[in-house]
Image (tube, rainbow, N blue to C red):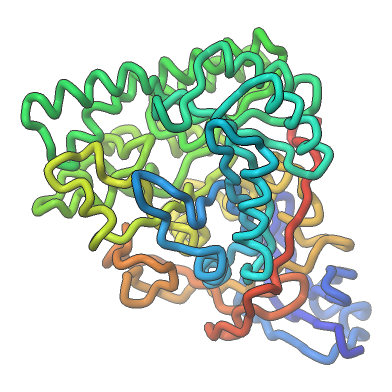
Length: 467
């Protein structure tokens, strides 16, 4: 009895269904669902009962793209695994997939072990890892096979950032060929970094140093070109491809064209591309630096193509690319030179709420909200149905969500370890009320009751979205 929790009276929303059902939880897992008011549900007893009347009962969010403690541009992302996963919980996200980083000249194992050490004992919610490949060679290609067996089943490569993370087409092809054999999924940062560096150099030479030029040099056509090239390389290798943080209409068109051919090509976008634009990058007094990320924010007219892509399933996932840097002392490193502004935005706490606002605004349906934020990321990265749904046997990662609460997003009230909000002053409808992680309340009626170390490493199978 003591480990039993009963959630009564809510509307259970998954990617597949919306049902008025009670949910019975035992030993950290969902045991059963039964229609609210039915004889079966009426017979259930539990040590703890949560009244979800007039609330949604949702699977915990799965954010498949975060960067806690990431070293970048001479500094580090300001959220640790402790602060970042606590903020995730406040926002209804109960699983993150973060990126372990291989340094050039070092093994994948060294990079992965460093990330295990950062996260171990510090996370409020469950976590998994992707692996960033910065140095593709015979040794690291062999290591990919071992990592897949260990539950690290996706590998990120960069067509951007020459001299840091960049891989050339030959290295990318080799990694894709390896993943075609070992079942891993290649994730691609698709921007033509070599060409962008030329445009950066030319802009700075003209004295164009403000944050808005970050968006102007990282052209949409260079995102589209790299997306196209990544797709063709994946075709040659016979490998599936997942393109991260898609921001431009032209890049969506490349993905749609590939999918129309039946190719296993997938895309994610992020809330910043759906709700923010180059107008933010152009904010005066260096305020635009708050919005510097890569791929960059685009002119507002790109947003319609991204929403359409989410509705047509040419884009399958919304992740955050959460990589926060404080305005004071970190973003300010780029005063007088936009190319020195650390790239990244805070967002792990805001994703579920912003996507609920998209439901309210009529962009997507409730079930599609759960599909792109919970179920598909779990399937894409091999942790479904343990994560991403509410069904017997699934982990009891559950959010009680008040769809009528009104809140104003602000740095004053958020829990991310960063001194600004990318959505400062935005009023939205809907708010997380209570969050269970494996049956344990981590947020209880808008109070944090979790702890560092509750979250555990979650090994992943290979991509289930291909089946």
